[in-house]
Figure 1 (tube, rainbow, N blue to C red):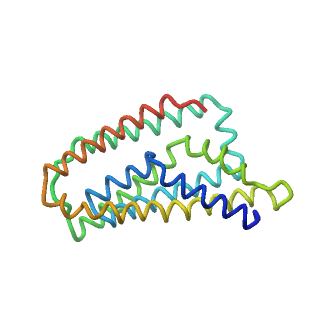
Figure 2: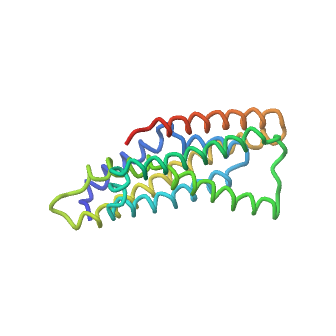
Length: 208
């Protein structure tokens, strides 16, 4: 396990990275503003579940294999970009109707969780980021590298949960106002669609 001072430095760096504008926290922000706090929290849980997989890939060395395989990396990029474009298409089709309650809300949360999970695991940039970021805090004279990677990955997930849930709570204040305005909801969905399209393009242009 990394030393406590190293772990604290890593935790603070992870908090800062979570606050920096990016595809995941922007998506949590917009969905929380439209659908409320719980929607943002559920998406965050899906995203962080994906981070568990990326941590395992880095710890097991699979991420390094992906980085050195142009074909595999390209296939993952195409899959991730395709999914982002699919989400953008859904956002553009949203009619701005008020969010449902009861059983409909439960189904929506299930879909939001899967959406966050798929957004994360289909993005090879996350594994490449972990592959570049985590080793900077690994101590050569400490425990096994794979164990340290797992601890660091878990710390990053905790930091992400804290930051993204805070974003969801702050953005949720807009949800009540948006529910009373179908036009405002449509505008925000359109903005979400444009952001997702730009993120898909950025992913396609990304080079490992």
